[in-house]
Length: 157
Image (tube, rainbow, N blue to C red):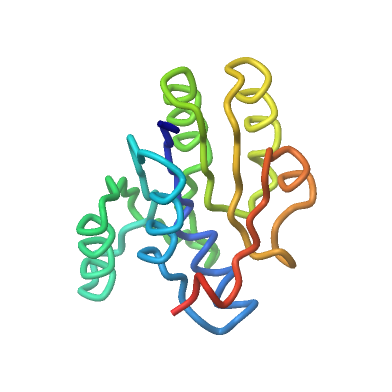
């Protein structure tokens, strides 16, 4: 059976689906679609934490679906910008999982992951699939994936 490791860049997907569709992403629909492809051996959602009730409910829902939720504090800088980047954490976890699975699935449109996906495909021979909003996903990320799955109506609430 196809062993799958799933990685969700929650902030990226939240903002891209909101910008492109004005709607939220449906993590349950994603889980059902991926579970039909094989055995989800691990699923991790990476998010920032502000500690508000709505976010806590969302994080609890992700856990109920089957995700391990990793949180970083949301940092508001004096200049008004914010920080809560999980890129290095996601990359480390993907490199750690790649030797143990057949398929890596990344939910993100961030082009910073293109080199990572190319590398795990080359070194470990895994399939590397990406789910992203087509108009807001880096072309380099789409090109580095074995398969690109466009987020559309089927994956929205």
